[in-house]
Amino acid sequence: MMDRELRQAYELLNNEILWICLRWQIFKQIFGTSKENIELLNEFAPVSFRIFQDSSYDDIILSINRLLDPPSTCGKDNLALSRLLLMIKEKNCQELHEELAPTYEEIKSKSKAIIEQRRKRIGHNDLESIKSNFHFLPGTSRNMVNDILADIYSFMNRVSGHFDESECYYRFLEPEGKDGEKLINHLRQLKDYYSSE
Image 1 (cartoon, rainbow, N blue to C red):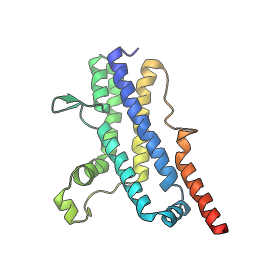
Image 2: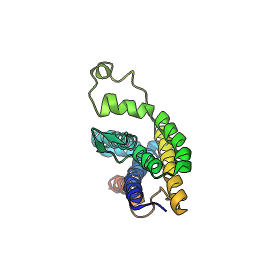
Image 3: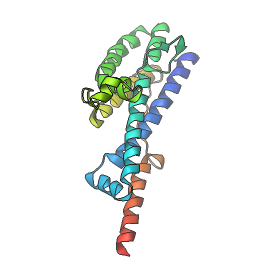
Image 4: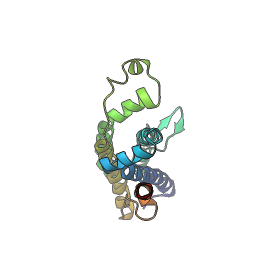
């Protein structure tokens, strides 16, 4: 059983991850399903949807980065995977810590490009990067984000599996999990309506 302190940290962290999961799911529904969707968005408000796409993607990158922060910064505790891992070690759950530590390192390794994006482009205006139009920054992709998030979900489910013999389903269904699809469907209906006039 998790003690109160560990459970609170786990639940707060899991809530943050669920919120990232929902935002990423809706992002993919709107911008990642088909070329047809992008053409539809561009027909209605290309600049607005481009701004929304870029800021939403950067928000996901920042959110994942925060999960990978050190256990504390400037003497203040962070809500991060490393904090949970440290707490597990401090609670003398050595076996679970040994199981999770390599997974955490693998997540960090896979996240090098998004960490660099935060440092040089999103979180700071790195002058050399801006001069080169961010040409020398490592690229990120939706597949990379999917892969990192899948590993984070696995990490959290190992914790809940160890203590509670349960797992969290990191996917949202009706109604909130379909918001992106609803937006696209409404735009299609609007397009059909104007086309039929």
